[in-house]
Length: 323
Length: 204
Figure 1 (cartoon, rainbow over the protein chains, first blue to last red):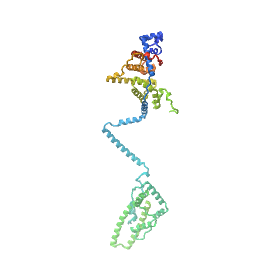
Figure 2 (cartoon, rainbow over the protein chains, first blue to last red; figure 1 turned 45 degrees about the vertical axis):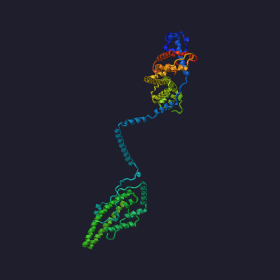
Figure 3 (tube, chains in turn yellow, brown; figure 1 turned 135 degrees about the horizontal axis):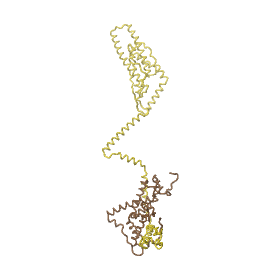
Figure 4 (cartoon, one colour; figure 1 turned 180 degrees about the vertical axis):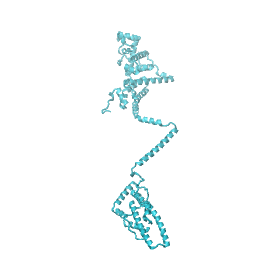
């Protein structure tokens, strides 16, 4: 291969930068002269090239403003922010309706959904709330020991005797709202303490004893007086749910049970009253006719007294069951 | 992140780009510090020596890198990729400038021809102005090739990668560009300019 074939026209650059025309080898000169007009052009190109590069060396390099770097770094930081936020914003923007009517409709639907959700949350929250956090609650109480029904009471009586007056006002509340939790606890503790005391047990035991046989007419007033006397003799006062509720504002399960028992007794009392009223009318009618003989009256008195004692015992047992 | 501080200055461009893709801000700062001077001067020469515009382009270029660092292909040399982006930006600006000058004809007079003085001395500054004016008249690709080769000292191979052309085409462009400039600047007698200067060595 000939040496001149090692050069291409563009390779003149290497020759221009390295050697002047007179230092070129004959083959190199031949190669240069094939592409250039002569030595002058070669030297002119070489001079231009070198002059240009010398100018670059002498020229002071320009420097960038520091603000450029700050801006570029700020752009990089902005780009490195979490992309999911932008994505979420974009998703949200997709769901935003364009026209006003649709947007208002969407807002209304969203508001209704929010209110519905809030309601659901409130219900769930209320149901899961501890009992002590409740302001008021409805307590589902167990049925107390069933007192004898009115039919049973009436069936055992041939002639009814009115019940005690102490049970006349026994219309306790069926559902009672209690007060604050703290008050509830304090009252419960106080009540337990009272119930556990010896006096309470004695009084309850005394109350549970059958009433002494009433000598006398055995009428309803006498029976009431006997009960009142029994109460006065003992320190224990018959529990009155209505007054208890008024005084402390709290009725416990036992109280409600008692109230239900007393309520049953009240119903029984009503029936007894009706029977007593009938009996009173009958007695008046007998008194006006004055046809009763003494033996019959004594028999009636004995029977009435026995019935009164039985009824008193039943009422007292009802009271005990209620307590 | 390791226990020891990373010496970003010692890392290669490609490694820095990997860190940038992962969001390493310091790597991005190191890359900017490494290339901003060269790119600023490149834009300055390519964009009619307009410093403000060159700074704007520099900022725009690195903003592009910051926003989409994954667009860099690690298989390619970073320098050529970066200069190819810069070159494309300049070509777009040339197109815009042509439209502007077509719309406002008197802007053509901005790059007026600087006449050479008579006499012995050759004004280097005037030669510089004239050289820049002649470079601006060249085709953008030729001008960019010439600037990369003789101002940025890029190798023929790198320039070929930037433009996506063969090395022979790059050499041919350089030869004819230099020949054209020498013909146009002949009146300045450049030989007097470099007779005391020492020619630099250029990477092949």
